[in-house]
Image (cartoon, rainbow over all chains, first blue to last red; front, side, top):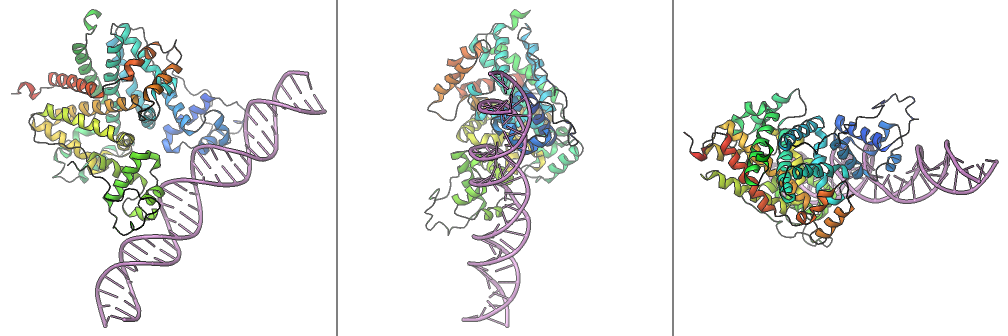
Length: 242
Length: 242
DNA sequence: CGCCTAAAATCTACAATGTAGACATGCCGG
DNA sequence: CCGGCATGTCTACATTGTAGATTTTAGGCG
């Protein structure tokens, strides 16, 4: 399950690229390079030409590993989601869900530029046609819940509530924390200061609170609330667990 | 609040464009046309040239109403969010939050192509520098909660949990319902059928369940769970705070 | 009425993108 | 050695955002 794959060997070998030509290309290498590009310089930096020059290859050659740019993006999201480990056999499903939530959060913080892909790519692809790597978490979590005693139908509901909340939290957190860590607080306050005081009194009053945001704690709280709520509403195997 | 603006008069009148030249342009008209374009043909159809020809104007002229394409996108999200009405003076904050959730859900269903903007644009703009129309819901909901008796800090927490869940739900729902309503179910099942049965047994077994998804009910359930959980965890004015 | 200036509209141009299609070049079995 | 096929490489083209020059329009003033 847990693949946690890292970039094979020569991650960058950027400009010098003396003898980098030789080594055979593979889908994994291409995707890894693409991911690195996105992580380092943002989504719009991932162009065929730039990726080609990062790999010291002709841009056209990349079409052998991804049918087009969209497929490349899908590949990147798949690669990132592969970093997420889900163990379907853990009887402590609540603990498992909690751990996964934190893992996914950290993953999002590690690859903030990929998050837009994570949330928007599925919007333009019918569920059944998505890359398998994207669907695997869904399947595994369903398995986890069903094994824990939920009916298939309820497992789906739980999954939806859970993942919905999870993605929502990630979006929230990434919005409030600026990527640039230096002028973070300054920019934040400066930005808030720009707001007309009469129209945005509470927002401005919360500047300090907004500045230090403990995402992990907030996420954990939310998960707790959600899980207890779910246990109460659905005939939950929570009691059976102990 | 609720503006629900439509394009003034001549919505399309494409090539003929007899006397359409006359009427003065305005930011609202431009944004409305842009929104229509996105609604009708998707995000990537919104190019300067296409928008220009939809308005029978030179594409360059549009830069008078939006500094660049990104600003145009921001304008569209602002316009869409303007459709959401929030009344800060309602003492029944839970009912209010529930209503807003449903309204936002319907809004997302009305403008599915705009949802990617709604969730990703804020990721690339520091909170304080976002279009005011985007921040207004936040401010208003904070007001609602504070008026209801929450401390400012707790109001922020509630807001985060609430909006997080809400956005998550919307993403979930839009992912599962294909935009094209005709071959929806067929495509879905066909898509699922493509999945390797050994790897995705539960997902495939849930095909029927996935096909009829009552988003409103699911959202309502989730909100209920969330609100009760929040009331329990935060010293909530639900039980009449001292 | 005639002109002159500022603003608004339009045109031209350019760099960058995704990608089709033609071309070259290596590799490998006969 | 030689055909053929996979694999790289080059050129070309349509489309994009947008800078800058150029034209057209509007309006004040003698």
